Length: 163
Image (cartoon, rainbow, N blue to C red):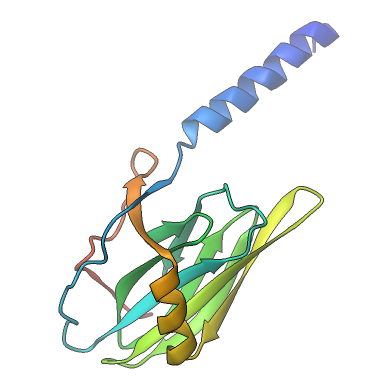
């Protein structure tokens, strides 16, 4: 296997290749788009709360489609088709929420980050329209500005299909 020095170089090289090869997600503050709600679709808004892990950018997927990402105090919205949706937040693990969407409705989901022993996880929770609208007014609306090479992301006017 080689000397300890060679093993150290190998491990560091693999770590750098992994870190650089995975790419990064980044969000940029933007005004909220005033897009009309497509027929049969619902509006889903993700609102990030909590200061733990606030510097991390965490991508969000709906039925495996990248719909946005959050960074401390940010939020974003997207459209989802009528039916069943599996939302997934990628922190230091995969945190999920099942959502049955009804066309014409609005859904507000908070992502609360928690850190323990250097590992950040998030909890996704549906909140009332009243609480969601209030939180939406206080967050920094943001959209994805950077994704890893080869990663597909939904366009703002796209509707994520149900399972």
